[in-house]
Image (cartoon, rainbow, N blue to C red; front, side, top):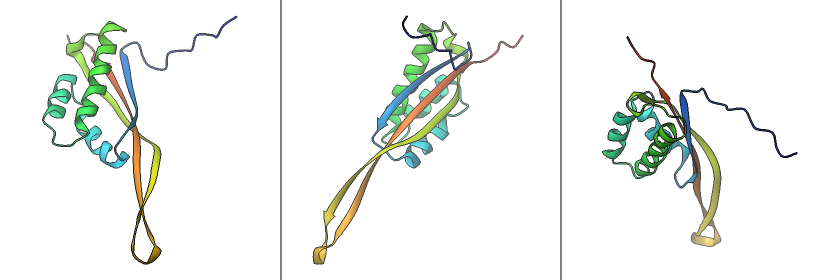
Length: 126
C-alpha cells in the first residue's frame, strides 16, 4: 500500500534548499535575498561573504546547501549554477511586552521568516 511518490516540482536542471524560522523579519531578509537573485552561484557566495548584514551568514548556508543538493542529488555542474529564485516568506511572530509608565505596555514583535533558494544550471553555449 504505502504512499504514492510525489511528482518533482522542479525541472531536472534545478535544485532547492529551504530554511524555516530564521530569526529576522521578512523585510530585512528580502533585502539580502535581492542581492543574490540572478547571480551565478560563486558570485552570490562571494557577495554574501562580504555582506555586513547579520543574516547574510544564514543565507549563505542555505545557498551552499542548495549547491550541494544540485551536485550530490541531481548531478548538476557546479560551475554553471546560478540563483534562479530566492523567495522569502513570513512565519510566526513572537509577541512580547515591556512595561511602560502609568500601567501601560509597549508591544514587542519578534518576527521569523522562511527562505527558499532554487539554483539552476545554465544551458551550454556553443
